Length: 201
Image (cartoon, rainbow, N blue to C red; front, side, top):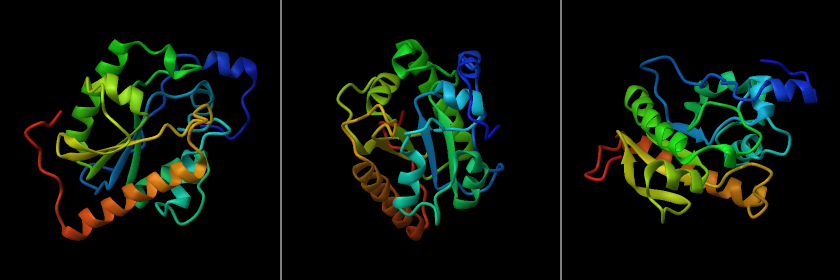
């Protein structure tokens, strides 16, 4: 993991590189597991999730109330202390998400199911509706809370926070993150984890 701004050569070398998930220790409560599509080359070069300049994930996380201050990508190791984690549908870094194949996304969906069953978050928040539709074969899925579950976890689809997603402003993204936070807090206050539904993925 590095704070140095990567060079063009660094970015090219980062192609197909994988970066570790950010997860709490086994048995530690996990409120929300955020799931990106896959790392950017910038993330691959720095070892930090959602690290590309212009990505709105970290500002939205703070503005929505998930964190008490704006965390830098290099501070991602602090997320478990907030009951949060990060993974990706596909582990390999690419310049653009559209470089991924449908089979990679479907395989990523299967891996996510296993990860959720092991760490048992209350919510899984997939940041990217198109990728979610492909990974789980739900072509009409929309952003927001979902009726299906992933293992024991409720599902929420978030807008892709990438700066390339110009249709969503930071304010709108943060508002959707805030809806998720409020739902997670309600579930926590109720003292229960979602049970697998008949249509569990």
